[in-house]
Image 1 (cartoon, rainbow, N blue to C red):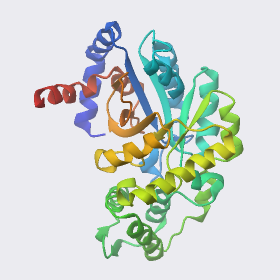
Image 2 (tube, rainbow, N blue to C red; image 1 turned 180 degrees about the horizontal axis):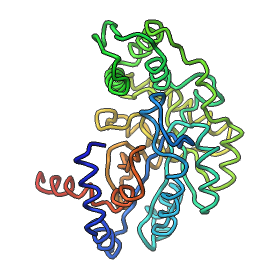
Image 3 (cartoon, rainbow, N blue to C red; image 1 turned 45 degrees about the vertical axis):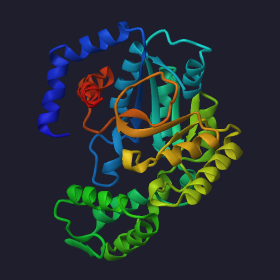
Image 4 (cartoon, helix red, strand yellow; image 1 turned 180 degrees about the vertical axis):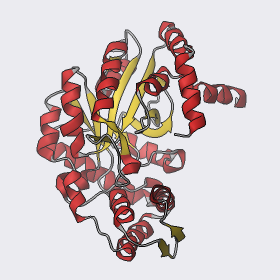
Length: 341
């Protein structure tokens, strides 16, 4: 988070603007739905370069955030949201859905005890091929190689030359370039990066969630959603390949947990990573919801696909968290959309 953005967030907090916006929103007839997006919940107070891009917060900060949500929102599951869309139930106040992406062991060891303490439900979107430590998440492999290498430059055809003096900056640049590539090329280049930097992350397999842990959480109000099997960016593979990958994830979840997922989170989840064809495919496969990584809050609507989320970063303290949860930070975008219409 830039210093300017941080200053703006704190100004919204201390001026009372965020609180006022939240109050006005809560008195409106149509209730707001905020979907909070987390990745890793670390027990470390200081984050290293390794997995830095995927760390959302510490367990200590998550405790504060969970407490705030429990006291100020009706924290619901996607099955509850489905009942609202069908008119079976009506929300009494603004709703929040807590989500975690990928399936990290930290979701069980660090987040789950806090959720149980506050009697909160949540949804974990699993990339099922990474369960049980079958393999390391590809972005973690890259982060590990960048962190551990003694090389000063990375020079691979397709990535150009990247200086590694500022490893956080270099990691961000590498990941952005990899995400823009077709899946086959991305996989090949990741192996080349590991080879050139002479640092391969075999030990990172231990950070994945296990199916036993997933089943235990399912028995305590934790919902499992699909995040594909292999975590490809779906617009970077064919529609048939996307279908096969998503079906594999559905079958894995059904077999291992006994429940069929009704919510799907797009890998990476920006506008360019989604399409109408993929939305239609997800509907045909029985999903009631698809979730993006596009920033914003939601209302209960008829078509609950490409739902926006509020991403939480390691730099968010309870003040900036409250500002984000209020919905005021996506207000300028809503005005812009109205003007465009």
